[in-house]
Length: 98
Image (cartoon, rainbow, N blue to C red):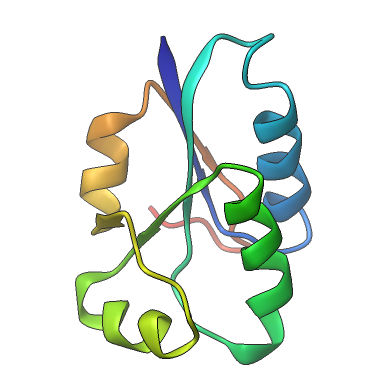
């Protein structure tokens, strides 16, 4: 089984991650990982929905505490950790993460 990493949970990333979560069995995915760079209260509902659907949260280690303050416990720390676990990485950030 493979894993997919969605970088960014905005306009494109959140629905794409939700789609992968919904089709996880059909696509033979072990896990769907979402990398969220910035912890924002306004994104809380969308992120909670993705995690409830089975996505795993990956964040910058320096911001993990801020995500925990919003009520989210990260599963993976650092973008590199998510990339190492994923067979496919999809960058949904406006400017690309490089």
